[in-house]
Length: 451
Image 1 (cartoon, rainbow, N blue to C red):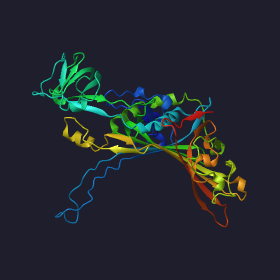
Image 2 (spheres, rainbow, N blue to C red):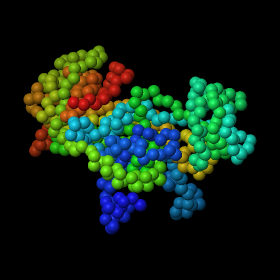
Image 3 (cartoon, rainbow, N blue to C red):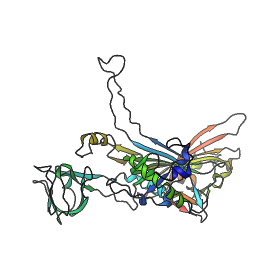
Image 4 (spheres, rainbow, N blue to C red):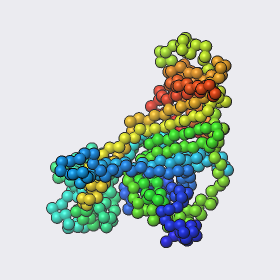
């Protein structure tokens, strides 16, 4: 048992009843897409520990049926396990260390979010095929016969495969395939195998590559939940108010959860605490330091007329962004990830197949979306208003720069959508303005720039 429970907690506290600040979240650039057989606690760099103010998980795996069947009586006698997803949500106050750099965990998650639209890595898997499946194939084999050769035909040779066993009882092996024979369902190897493999529990797997300048999948280790693997950032939301710290909310999807690694987080808790003590002091970023600045337009008018000819806006055209009148701002970056379900599990254990197939095979994006809402107090002075006409930023004096004090994000091309107005007799008139990012460059990335 870790000293954590002896020294950090009192004898009256038992595991499972601590308050939330006893949770631990560690991020690793290793997504464990090839399985957790080679799990290593050292993959979780102390620089990427996540300092969050709340942490929530959603599994939504219902065990009931929506229908009542004939003859069941007053109480149901059947149930069903439906497909489900694993989602994590947490809020991370943005912090800056004494060197002036933001928390590296936030930086890494933001980059993962920007490239999350590439979706999940996918695999091509084939099980060993043999007339004597329980008889091991000794080392020195120059070819492998598999059950689904068709998926391997589209791969350009040579390509790399990895040989696994269902129960992890046999040695993992990575080899190159020199050619594929469709008629015999054979993978011909560039070099012979060096380990023994039993056909009844062995399979080969190939990871398909994602063309990206930055990897987009990762894993998260939780003290209370376990190891979330093949994670993708689905959504990042910034909530900015002048009277509070700036907080980034992350919504993450994972392809799998391995609860057995809770023990590894627990047994290394004291070592992790010692690493955290080496951190430089941090300060949070106040929303009072947030600024919105104009950026010169680059979109053109798209055939639309100038704003001065609009009867809706004439006489109340705001020329500048007046931060003094802004009450709060929200910024959302969403990858619109959608789960795909298939009969993906190809193990020899039927119960494991049934459980694995309830989880998504992969996530794909329906397109990244960046949008923001600005709530502001309306002034009677026409030239202090933040009035915009719907359409591209060329009609509104250019794009926007969101300045977070220690870093900034520039949105070159945006389309405005004027929002609502609310007013009461005993309060200021409040209005909202919405915009969504557009781009004339397919490779444009809304990066954050240190200041």
